[in-house]
Amino acid sequence: MLEKWGLVALAAFAMVALFLFNWNFQRNFEERIIRDQLLRAANAASDAATEYMLWNSEETPTGLIIIDPDWVWYVYKFTFLESIGLNSRANINELEHFFPAVIIAVNDGYFMRGATLNPNGQWEYRFGHKIPFARMPALPTQTWGVVPDRGFNTVNPIIPASNPGFPVIVADTMNGRNINVFYPNWDNSADADHFGANNGRYIRYAVDGRALDSFEGTAHHQPSIARELLRAMDASMRWNASPNSAYRQGGELRIPAEIVNNFNSENVTFVGPMVIALADNFTWVGNKAMSFWTLSNTQIVAAPRVYVYRVAIPGVPGGALLYSYCDPYGRDIFNQDMNPRIDGRPFILHNGSRIVQIFNSEHSAAIFGAYPDMAYAHLCS
Image 1: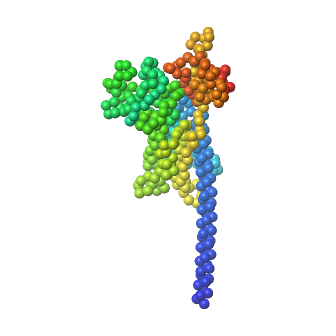
Image 2: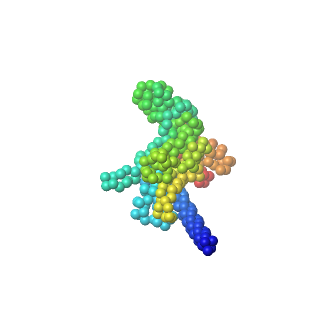
Image 3: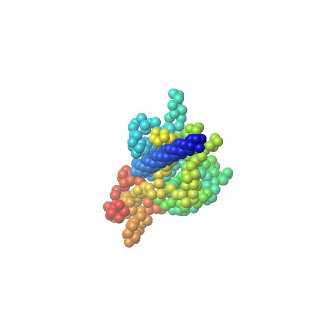
């Protein structure tokens, strides 16, 4: 009799175990599906925000990128919630605290979103000012062409290495162009190669569209930009993440290993705008809190480049200021037979370069005062 009851108990235990196994398997399967949906939503939001930033940013003649980070983030939140069927004005506002780290990076710096506690005990999230990719170069940097701020007779000047006696502060850019350098001890009263005094001076290099080479320790190094963004993520998570965050362990922050590996790789290059968003403890769908992150793919997002140049025209004093998608050096033309025609044009050099300025849109080039180059527009449209 005891043996019979033992078999019955064993069978009951097996049925319960099978039920629990099936229930747990089904739940995990559903959670995996939900997680995949969230990741697709986050990727769609990241792509939409990056596209918005790509087409709505402006570049000034001095290489300054102008963009409203709040609108970029709004596009991200709107697309994310729309993708999971939860889009509403209230949800857009409530979504903020699920993203402890949000960084919007452009060519000449990045915006980092922070959280502050207002007098009513509510958290407010907002972006600060643009932070440049700044560093002090340990090695001299070879530049190319004429740098107007160092005098028109100065060709291929070298950005010196920083040292305690003569500090050099560089504001790097992703593409290696329009790099600003601040010399605190530059003597403005002397010639361009004389260093001394304490007047200070800003000088902009690589202004003609040709990028500086990327080398560690110099004024332009793309992996250093990546590591600076990684440090910004770390600082943002330390400030904004909740105490029970999955990214914290023993009081220390744990940035996902995939992000660290990607950003620390020497093979990482950034060639366009970027949206970084890390979500934590998202509980609106599924049966448990989830954490995920997305990075817009800057490798395949190429901003349009509208070149402005001045061409000599008979009977027109000073020539004509024109614009097109054609690179005046012939680097963007698919039909290589056309290159000699571009190279053979009677360009009026601007500070030693054929390029006056590069913009992201024809509208910006037109506002700058240039006219469309009808003779070559069909080659690079």
